[in-house]
Amino acid sequence: MKDAHVSSPEFNLTGRKVLITGAARGLGASFAKALIEAGASVVVSDILIDEGQAMVKSLGPRAHFMEMNNAEPLSIERGVKEAASWLGGLDGLVNNAAITNSGGVSHDQLSIDTWDRVMQVNVRGTWLTTLAARPFLIESQRGRVVNMASDTALWGAPQLLAYVASKGAVMSMTKSLARELGEHGVTVNAIAPGLTLVKATEYVPQQRHDFYQQGRAIKSPQMPSDVNGAVLFLLSASSAYITGQVLAVNGGFVMH
Image (cartoon, rainbow, N blue to C red; front, side, top):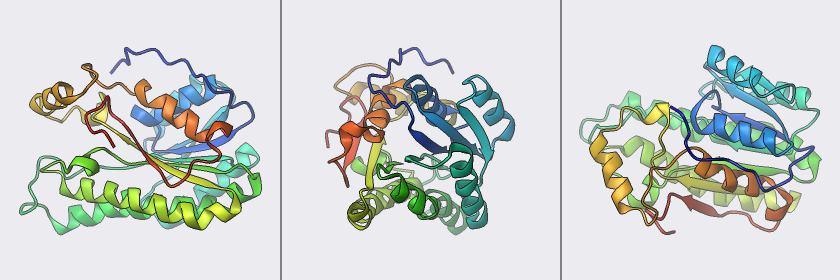
């Protein structure tokens, strides 16, 4: 799906070394492109190998693809080390990898297996990736962690319980990690986007898209590039004294 909004990074991130998980397409791919345009070097990780390799090829020599499965602890540990090795360190981590799986299913129809799978990737994967990146982020002396949450956890979207619960956990983890990593000079923040027009949300009924658009203060569809600026800011030197925060980027659907 083509992103109709124009992305023009206003932050100079030249020399920054960033790992973005789950970034072969959608929001993560948009972040990678914006970071490259802002001067950073980027490692994109995903389980979608062909899409990921094709995407980074279009970004040039400062982008690298790496297969990493956020449901597998050993894959995460190896992947973060490989990313830091290729980049020559790690200044920023964007925990973007996530799955929905429970969309359209009410709480009384939700299976335990689905619940566990969503928590495994979205919550445990975020924790373990941050843990693996911790020594590199501390060493950089300008470490930044940006966790991708969701505004569904701010308003309690129905028929999406596992996903909503997982993103609520990501918000809470962000605050706790910010306190634990703050003494090392590492900031940890979260972004809560609204319903964004990407391939991963094509299954969402048009009625839900209309509900979001009508409820926004800014009456337009949310595109991936609408989130880029927040990611760039939270990875930049300009956000050095901001940590433990959840920034809702959703056109005013939820004002947090």
